[in-house]
Each structure stands twice: as structure tokens, then as C-alpha cells.
Image (cartoon, rainbow, N blue to C red):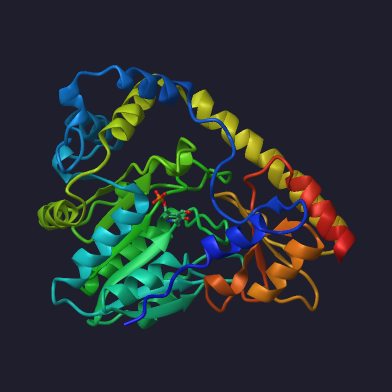
Length: 365
Ligand SMILES: Cc1ncc(COP(=O)(O)O)c(C=O)c1O
């Protein structure tokens, strides 16, 4: 069986090898500083005793899990520290599939492409529910597709690539649908610190044996390379998830977890607020320049991506290569996220040159 390999690295490589200056807006790699306490924690770790250089507990450092449990108001036993949200999504989807409770996984269109890739890898069948024009998800459409073959429903809010933030009612409905069909709702909340709408509410506030919440520090602390995230599982699934995590990974990285723990304890809300303010400015500057370019675009309520559509220029991989070569701007083709936005191109606002990039696009078009 062939697994679909997401295109991100391919496009990044093409941009890096281009013969000209390119503004890279391909990946979700933040270009801003992590919290100072994160750097301090890592420096401190370098001088730790040798026993601190050995395996941490497989489920994650006890103190980190306790810190997470307290902040999220859940039992420490439910928390599994993972190698990012990526692994946490995998653990949740795999757990949903191994229960003999159906083999279909409901995803949205557009979709974060790692979900269908994992679905194939797990021998599941993907069922796509189109989102609305503004990126919102109508639970009634999920209900139409859900059946007793549904093992899992995976949603992402705030959303990559649409920037939509699902409201509480949507999440309650999704949990209810999962309960009705003995499915697991996986809420990927990796952009939970990037809500510009004030509407985001974690699915953790909806208590259910049928929902798993996934997040990570990759984006919130600007450390995609550290690989620290976690999942909060219902009691009835957490043991199986921990076993799979142990068999696949043994455990996670102790220095990274230690640094995250130090940062959690020593970073105040200003860090996150300042990052959001900086991103708001970027969104304004980029979308103003897109207005000038006469492009259609989606203004994100959350996360840090803008989808833009240019006349007679669909979001194909070839067109993205053309923009790299001829405009000096690299984005991701909309067709990489399913069919619903295949006319669009996604730009990640992870560069201080976002406004310049939009000006280049205006010139080109
Ligand atoms: C929706 C979504 N989920 C998961 C991930 C992966 O996150 P992590 O680095 O925590 O594995 C990303 C990364 O861009 C993402 O956009």
C-alpha cells in the first residue's frame, strides 16, 4: 500500500532551490522567538545530572503531566505527552480504529493533509464533509455522513488551512454525534493559542468518553522542532494509547519536555498576547495588500494562514512553482488540502516579509 506523503517538504525544497529571492510562506514554522524561559530551561538542562539524561517515563515527565493536568482541569492519568500533536492525532485515530467499532474516519474538506495520510496508513476509509464557504463546519452535514461504520471524526479548530474557529455549539454537536455512533471525536487544537475571534473554546470543556483533545507546544511556544505535545484521553482509552505510544516511540525527549515545563512555569500571558498582536498586524498588512492585488481571500479567525484566490490561477502544484519562480513568493497549493479549496493558495504568515510578499503578488497579477 502506498501512503500519501504530504507535499510540504517538496514545496519548501523547491523554494529553497529557486534561483532568486523567495519569501517562504509554505510551512507552519514560526519565525518568532520562543519564551525566554524555554531557552533558559534548555540551558539549565545541559548541566543536569547524568540520570536526567536517561529515559523519561514513557507517558511523559510526571511534573509536566501534572502541570498540564492542573492547567487543563483533567486527571493526570488521562494525559499522554507525545511527540507533538502529530503523534497525538495518530494515537487517537489508531485507538478509534482498533476497537472494531467501524473503519470509517470522517474528515473535513479542506483537510490538514496528514489526517487522510494517517487514515490510509491505519487501513481506514476517509469520508469527507465539505465545510462552508467561510470555513465553518455544519454538524448536520457530519451527521448525514456518520453511521455505525464511523470509528472516528477528526476536526481541527482553530483551523489549518481555513482559519475558522468552531463555536461551542458545533463542538457539542460533534461530541454528541460521536457518542451516538460509538465513535471517537478527535479535536486537534494545536492552534489553541491563536484565536483572534474570542470564540474558541476547547473541547475539553465538554466531558465525554468519546472525545480526545490533542494539542502541542509546537506553535504556542514557536518550537516545532522540539516535538512536545499531548493528548487527553477518556479513561477507557488512555491505557491503550499509552501502550501504543510506548511500543512505537519508547518515550519522548527529556530535554525538550524539561524545557517546556520550565517555560510553562515561567512564562506569563503577555508572551502569548504579544505573539497574537504581531500576527494580527501581519494579517492586516497581508490582506490589505491582497485587496490591492484584487485577490479574494479568507481572513482568519484563528491560526496563521490566509487562503487567497487569484483569477484564472488555480491552486495547483505547478502554479505554486510558477509563483516561486516568477513572483518570488512560496505558498502551498490548495489542492494539497482536498478538493474544496483547489482554486486557492495557502500562505503561512510566518515571515516578517508578508506585506512585501503580497506586493510581489500584486505586481505579478
Ligand atoms: C492541524 C495541525 N495538526 C497538527 C500539526 C502538527 O503539530 P506538531 O508539530 O505538534 O506535531 C500541525 C502542524 O502544522 C497542524 O497544522
